[in-house]
Amino acid sequence: MNVASLLDRAKAHGVMIATAESCTGGMVAAALTDIPGSSAVVDRGFVTYTNEAKQQMLGVRPETLDAYGAVSEEVAQEMAQGALRNSNAQLTVSITGIAGPGGSEFKPEGRVCFGLAVDGHTTTTQTVEFGPLGRDKVRLAARDHALDLLSRGLSSIA
Image (cartoon, rainbow, N blue to C red; front, side, top):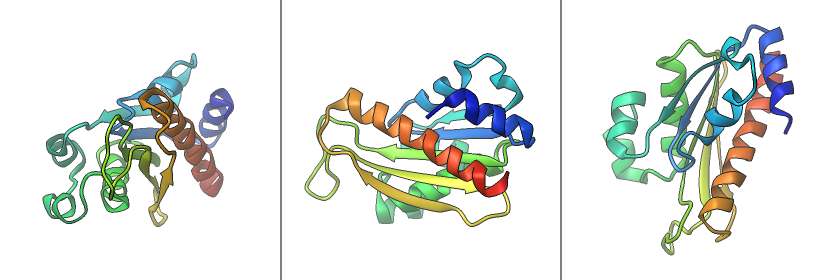
């Protein structure tokens, strides 16, 4: 994924981007803002590591967290929509997952849920099973996948 190209495309179409990250802890926002001139495109990044932060900053509903858990497409969807609602962005991506070590039989290490919200479109979600690659590799893979999702989301509006 060429991040500079993504930012150039967003800028050319007047699209602002925001991120809502849990297990990546701001890595997507960092990758975007590593590029000079990114302030023309990147509005903000939300790092919502705890359930409380997801609720306070993004409006994730306690009922959703209780019913599905933080690592779920339902929470990823609400995170992406909350980032859209609480920013000046037209394109947002969210990430919530289990980077490791650890996990459980039902939510194994390497499971990451993503949300993609595009203003005026239906929010999409997906789960990727990266597997027990180790914390660093899962986080990097999740970051790269989120950047790819942003690129695809941009294609739907630009």
